[in-house]
Length: 377
Image 1 (cartoon, rainbow, N blue to C red):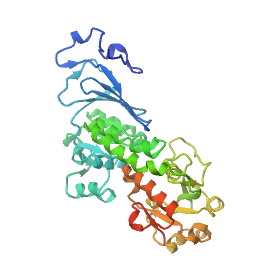
Image 2 (cartoon, rainbow, N blue to C red):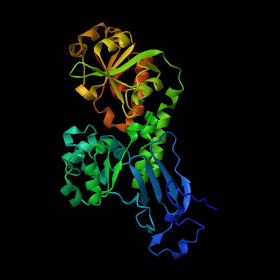
Image 3 (cartoon, rainbow, N blue to C red):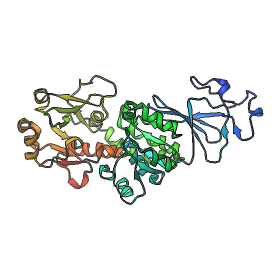
Image 4 (cartoon, one colour):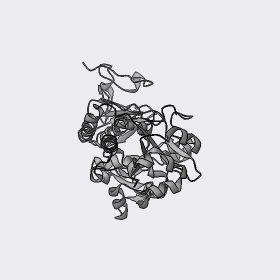
């Protein structure tokens, strides 16, 4: 017998479950939900999903909402609670604002589900997205704070996927919903580790009806890093940083997923006591003097190019911050720079872990074996 799942804050009367006698009186064009199982997740904690008979899936995203994914030919659900947003498949003509999500759609071979972008073509490092916009298959519909409502409505948009920046402009979210466009706020950036972030691929597999494909791709990513996770730490100390235009150093907070990747790859993240002022904060800004005192003798420096651009040479790095000339890693040549595409290519975090591991274990790996790191020479 299927167990009844009343869900927190979801009254039993709201969903006619097996055995309660309501299914017999439901209209012919509506359905009652019979709980089957909770969707299994190995790492992600910022969303959950419950699966019901008939292919219905109830997705819960804290601070975003609850969404009932309804199969294309399935009946409507009777007495659906007001806080549950129905999303009928196929979900297409999507307005995608969150840049970290595009790579997940690319991996699911679902780029054709996106009609509108909150980023212009020149702002994309995901080549498939840039090409789709240049060819007119995806149109620019305004950034998160100033969407082109007319274009969004004319496209027949079935879903807007935003990041948490939209919470700073709640009126925009309200207006989209007023026009009948459901808004999903993705929270993968609040996950504690890289594998948890990548597991959000399964959410989009659920939304798009491609769960098996999503599960297989994620399984391959986990298998890619599994041998690395089984290795002992190299003991090499590492600082992951960038330099702002006003001469501050930006580093990742201790519990941030990038800091975790350093440890997963066999390094030791040097800033083991920086947590910032808020749970959602991923970076901490340090005065030059503090960074010098903490990181001068680290074994490996990794420069984050996404803020101020790629640094290719030692001279360029020192020009940005002259004191770096005294750093052990700069003098030894153990200084690396990330590719600018890194933080848009969400499903490639496994490759960055692999890159870091090669740098930590081999010192000077073949450049052709690296995808997201290049040596600063």
